[in-house]
Length: 473
Ligand SMILES: [Zn+2]
Image (cartoon, rainbow, N blue to C red; front, side, top):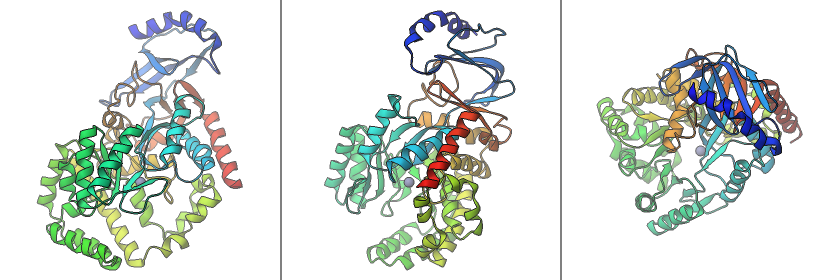
């Protein structure tokens, strides 16, 4: 209340300063809004929220707001205000500048996704883009960058080839020197993995990504891997025959015997050991490792044979050139029938595993791995939240996985993840309460990005433009 009054009293000063301001008002006010507290699920009912420039400067109960020039007042009666959403696993620097900047970014914002963690792409492109976004020259979400992939494959624009401990140390030093936020591991040999962990600790940069097959997820957690993507290595670490199956898998991979490697998946699932899993999950829960299960991605991979795929209304936002690569016939060509059967089993199993891990207190974040086939930038984050609820999360816990948890993980909870005074004004205004039904996060009435308000009409215009562009590409 006090903060709000101060904010309102200070308007005179703010208004003078903003005469030279760019477009739109510098002060945005929501009246009569229900603010969702992502910390505890409390709802501040019917309050006024004052936003000055890019920050929330007041939240309180007032009946009167002075009407002035350069002041935008939104009657948010009956609406619910949540912090901007974060997708913690995307690839937004891959396909082309047009696709990335004019398709993906508007799709994120139109879906209330105001921050993303990019998990591998061309670092030059992404760093330049981040600067333009933060300078207000390009409309897009906040970008957190993991830089290039560290992988035992050959080097390219988005990959540093890592085969030895020396390669590993050099790669970590280079990533740190470039100012990336994370080191991303794709697949590296065992000794290189531990060299990454050692150098990352020395350089004080977190490392994240896949757990290579040569390393137990148990070891990855102990080594301080800050996030594990796609539950990689988790099921194997829960197998009563973990060491034996790992040895067999490594032999199969070394001799490129992919058929035998795939068959191991069934055995991994068949030898799932509940008590072993419980001990492991408690180890993760008491560690600093987060999980980004990307359930929506696993589900998409397991449904490439579904006839419904081509009827997805969101395909209209996918440029034809990308859509071509998503053609089921093409995808099925590189996925054998037995592999697809394995993917289906694994997709179901992942939901159960997330349930058990969540019950054991493991920390989770929402991520999608878009734009992989049928993982739609922006839209699919809402699907992921629904999958988390199907995996035993309450709606509040699912919402936290895309708001407060990313902020805590990024050590930026003073700026993001909460709709509170002092926080960055990245917000989503919903027509209905997301704590009653997580699907309500899709009912977007407006989005605030860095203090600038986009009404439903403005968001629809954004989507229309993407649709037009997609049709031309
Ligand atoms: Zn990925």
